[in-house]
Image (tube, rainbow, N blue to C red; front, side, top):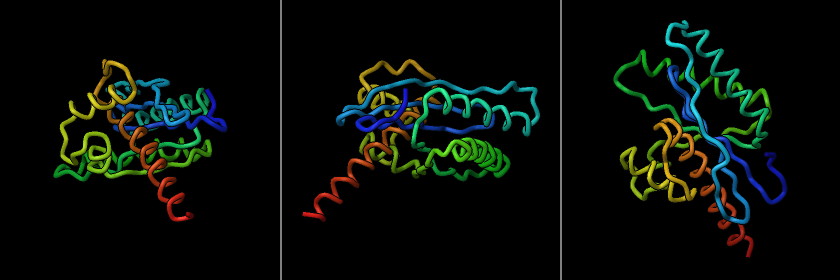
Length: 173
């Protein structure tokens, strides 16, 4: 499915070195719908550089298959474990480079903003986010947490776009 005049197709990404979630959400006339979602899971015995290459290649395949014009991704959450944060940043980098290679504009959002956008609270639990993603897209959320987070980023981006467009129309009038 290709993004066209009245359709806006966004790729949401939840990068991780062991599991990267992705989700494609389409907006047509203000109605959001799920296009596809899944996870990219490199083999655990691969070294980090091969896992990053695998993530990059799989995201390229998703982009080539669906041709989204935009991507949404969470900003890096810095935890107490610096080694984990570095690996997360590297996986995020592989995802961003895949988008750049295909000319897909990337928009990054703080995790608290994504949660607040969907649930109304910046400290919402993962289960609440998954529930709201399912309600917004009109489907039962029977997917891994990584998919919910990726879809949440895509939905947040589409909501932010509509909000910004509304502000621009108000300012112009």
